[in-house]
Length: 165
Ligand code: CO
Image: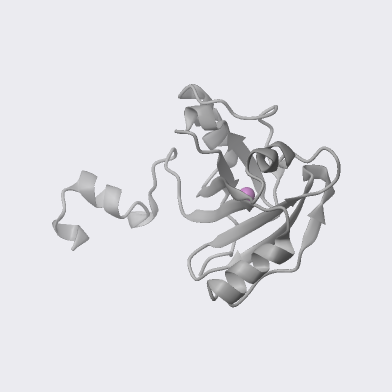
């Protein structure tokens, strides 16, 4: 099918064709970040109500001020995040949304530094110093301010090597 499409459309529909990809194009949706006052309570929702079959162990990321656990889905993950410590970056979010809620979306990018520089060149605000830090998946991440992203906090993450089939 793609061979009958004009080249530009073909690339749009199949960005990894011929191994080429626009350097500024986001890749897979890796996860949706969900803030919650209780990961254990959220497990009940995702496992018992929604029927997910696998969650990862709850673990602390003290440097990021969160507890984290992943709900494994066939095509992506739900990243459950609960405040850890007194200065958690999601405390204010939970004050506004006491039952929790969607906090961010995370897309994979081929090169985190290229992505950061392109975000800035396009006028988007990269949070913090802009130096990528190691995220919950063990690969570098940056965050882009929701004011420039249609109200959505966007996490960009270096593609995990060997993560996908
Ligand atoms: Co995340």
